[in-house]
Structures are given as C-alpha cells and as structure tokens.
Length: 336
Image (tube, rainbow, N blue to C red; front, side):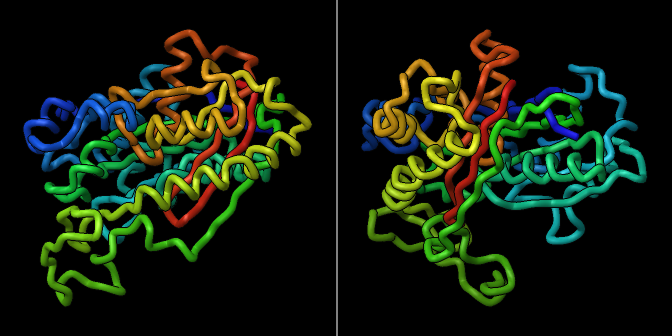
C-alpha cells in the first residue's frame, strides 16, 4: 500500500511582529539589508498562554473542517515539536483528547526541528506501508518565539510561530517517487541548541545569567542558540549530495522536477542552493515573507500555499529537502 497527502491545515497566531517592530526594538539594526538576506518581512508570535499544543489543535481543526474528515478514520497521530505542554505525558496524547479521536488511535511525539516534517512523513508512510495504519495525522507545531531571548536580534528577525496538520492516507497509486533519504552529523549537535532545561543541565541547578557571546549577542543557555554561519555552510555542503541521491534513486533529473520545496530557513540560503545546483529560480518555493522560519512547519506551509496560489498542481513532481538541528538532513521526491 502507498501513501499520499490528502490535505494540509494551518494555524498562525494572531500576534504579528513586523520588521518595523524589529527596527523599533533594535534602532541600530540595518533592517532593510537584513530583510534582503532573510526574506522575512513579518512573523506570527504566540501569545503568553498559547502553546505549540494549542496551535497544533487549531491547525488540525482547520484541516478537519476544510476537507470534512471523519475523525474516527484517523488511526495514528504524530505530533512533531521541540515544545509541548509538559515533559510527560506526550503532547500527542493531549492533542488526541482535545480533538476527540478514537481510542484505538496511536499517538506519539517526535522532536527533530527543521527536518521534522520529513521524518514525520517517513514514519507515516512506514505505518501505512506496513498495514499498521490507513490514515495518519501529522501535526508539526513550533512556538519557537518562546525560546528566543528578547535581546537576540538575529533569531527574532528569522523565526516565527506556526502549526500545520497534514493528513497522510493510504493510496493505490505510488506518490512517493524516491526513498526517504536521511543523514546526521551529531558532532555539530551544539550549533543549534537550547542547552539548559533538561536532565543534563536542570534549571534549578544552573543559573540563567545573561552573557554576550562572540557575535555580540546577549543571550543565556535557557534560550535558543544558533550558529548561523555553521548552519549555512552545513546546508550548502550537504544539499548537493542529498539531492543527487534522491534524483538518482527516483531515476529523475533536475529539469524533470516541477517544484523544489526546501525548509524555509532564509532567502539567501535558498537562493544560494538554487545557484549552486543550477535550479531555475521559478522552480524554488519561497514562503518566508509573512511567516519567517517556522521550523518543522515550514515545508507543509510552503506546499499548501503553493497549491492555494495555483502554482502546485496535481501530477507535479516535488522535491522536498530539509536541513537543521542535530545536525540532520532528509528529503524525498513525490508526485502531488
């Protein structure tokens, strides 16, 4: 049995943080120059009492109402987030209850940042291929703004909060044209990190004193740190190998791909990837300007926005690739 995407529902928090707001908060920041590099003009920010679980539920409700899903047909739920309401239980169990899903529906959490959607789809595809499930609800949801230091102008300029709910169902037709291909370089785990808050560095034992890092950014170890140059170089160096492997696996060439949907990290990285791989710019999806980098939700957002704009149509070949925290990478090619 094969798998396919039946629909994608989205949720964005009501609060919007614009580049004008960013300029007001950081008067010396060259926002126009930064916007050219990031491609981000505004981003949604979760309210104080709004969590990734709340957003994921809203995205799922949007999907269920949009394509009129029978909730009893969903037999597995995957919740992908670095956040969550509690350390335990799994957030997927809370989402399951709030959505009123059937009791014989499996529920599990995963946490893999920017490559989370690819990992989640791979798990859903495996569940369907093995006959364990026929309909899998994959929710990706990140309230990443809660992890960004208020004085961290770089990360505040890039990241935004959002959730996406993707229904992946069984199909008699083969839609996944390549294998899911993954990789990990764990030696760089500390280049995107929130160091304090779990068992290694519990907050009640390690003081959260602010400091100025080598880049002149004020931060502390309970907030997210990202080495932008390392992430950029890693992505640029790994992309050609990953994409070549996917194309070879699917017996396709670059000019046979209709759309390239990369994790929406920032505009300059996507443009550089396109130039390095000689991909026509019109085939690269850019969905950053209103949402920013929404981590695990960026790919499903880019997919459904492309559909809504009339760019992505049934039968189109789509190459999906993501790079990020861990360091990890992954991708696949599908027919929409």
